Amino acid sequence: MPPPPSPFTLRTGIYPEIDPARLGGALACQTALVTGSGRGIGREMALALAQAGANVVVTGRTPKEVDATTKEINALEGTHGTAYGIVANVLDRTDLQRLVDESLGKLGGAIDILVCNAGSNLFQPFHLTDATEWWDLMELNVRAPVELTRLVLPSMRARNKGTLIYTSSRAATADLPWTTAYNCAKTAITRFAGTLQAEVDQLPALEDKTPDVANAIRCYSIHPGEIETSLHDTAFPQRTKDKAPYVIEHMAKIGAHRPHYEGVLPAWTVVWLCVPSEAREALKGKYVDCTRDVVEQSKAVAGKL
Ligand SMILES: NC(=O)c1ccc[n+]([C@@H]2O[C@H](COP(=O)([O-])OP(=O)(O)OC[C@H]3O[C@@H](n4cnc5c(N)ncnc54)[C@H](OP(=O)(O)O)[C@@H]3O)[C@@H](O)[C@H]2O)c1
Image (cartoon, rainbow, N blue to C red; front, side, top):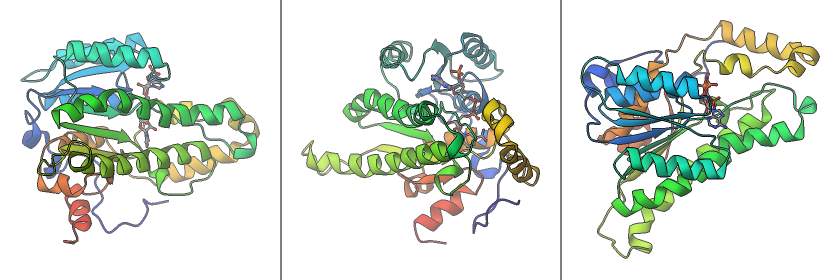
């Protein structure tokens, strides 16, 4: 099955707008916290943000992976930001607070960029799902990023500076079968990003009584592209393999016809979203599909396409 029809140019890897040669160093002196960055898409994002000059906190539950990515960043050639590893479980409130406190300590007191990327999925027909597993996916993909935002947003508001990025999914836009919890979760976090943007835009006038000050905090949700990470294995639990092998066949058929998307595609799209530009302004609060040209998406939102 080819990618869904879209008026925008398909992108599968680096293209001129998000080229590291253009964006390298653009985030010098900025700080970033990327959840789920020990491996997979989050690792690519942390690497790209550091290559763009940001100091980055790498985090996840698996110490070995957090350590490996942190070391990999700090061993990069050329100019780059510094990485700090912090092991934390985003589902644990105490850990979440510690993650923010320790990040602020390592990053010099400010988190300029928060990427809520940690997430997971399970493919199984709804009638076979276990209630706890179903709601656990909502907790990881919705409650954790919302609660992390609650801890980080006040300091962004105090400085009137910050970019909040939520890793959503194409699942937020389509009734993909066998993944009800994930679809609901990614829809929720996408709406959260858009609604939060609408709120923070109004706060200077309504709450701070500073109508002349424009809010400078930007929120985005992104579809990173179907990237071959460990998620593509862990998403198929034994129950699905035993009782619903048709799910695996269905997903394999879809996968066979899909373009190969590179991890650098969402990673450098995230960097692009953190660098002020007219195009990123047009997209504030929006769901950004990394597999489609970002400038074309921004022109469409601005009514120029
Ligand atoms: N891969 C795709 O095709 C695709 C497509 C659309 C959207 N996404 C989204 O992209 C994001 C990253 O996925 P991925 O493909 O890179 O998957 P992945 O390789 O499985 O990485 C997931 C990351 O999240 C972390 N994580 C999971 N549970 C956690 C918890 N309770 N506390 C802290 N960290 C936790 C994992 O680290 P630990 O296990 O060490 O904690 C890992 O670093 C997810 O939000 C996913 O939904 C992926």
